[in-house]
Image (tube, rainbow, N blue to C red; front, side, top):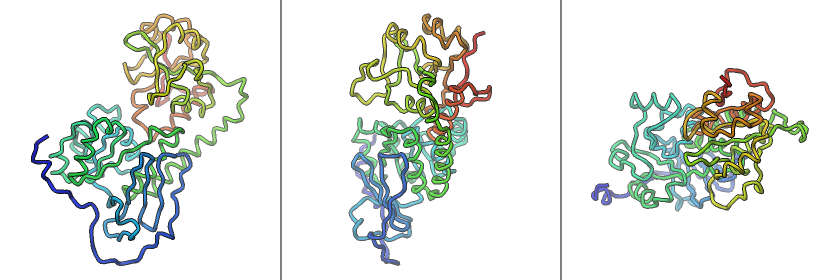
Length: 370
């Protein structure tokens, strides 16, 4: 980082001007959030007061709006925001869902499993601007970056967040990964709708997707007839990496009508923030060998196409009930970057669990026994 950047004065985020209308905070109403718990929005006409559970708060206001006196000391971000730097890869798909990719100018990720992002990078519509911990400050400034959206990894390098803000680039740290419900993660699309001026599109998309999950009516399934599901991958040092019971993938399985095979007692779950933990193969085998369905997580070491490849990862998998019954599946690599597809993933899981999945599945494929 070049030293002279530290001397660049703070860019004022809110504009001054004559007041056109008097806005009363007393007329505020809360944005309806069905599942999300990590942020709130209080709306006053075209002005939104956003609070995130990390303690951050800010005002979203159109460029020509006046700010009520009660909000004068709160950071203001003028909307619609342009030239956004997305340093949280899970957010990209939500912007795509509300047709707002044209407002995203920079990314901190080079490798994407979603073709539309790679196309945008290749044709210059989106530019790689450095990792979250080493952003290209000069590039962001020269191209008038209007906002940086970070995930909680930025707290490992708080000086970067401070530097961005000192340079006049507001920062939002999104907390969607802390949402206890999978649809809560997706509901952050409503915040991005406010940021981009696509509030109605965000509301409509979320309502439609949430309704599809709610219509699965999994409460009608007899608990004794629920199929058990294991979701895992084999690490390079021979452990089985599994999701914790309260992880969002585990909850997706439950929302799809399945029963996640591991309980907190099985895993002796610790209190760290990680969503996964490693198990000795012997312990994994003892608990998961009789699972009705196994899903191999391809995100780390690539997709598995056939049983031979699966067994090469770990020979004892050949004894698993799901392998013998041709009910072993593999996730597609883009599953975890497609936050906006949370509902679709749950629905596809439901098809796997209910034996109604066809060959045109998008997020999972059956591991064939060649």
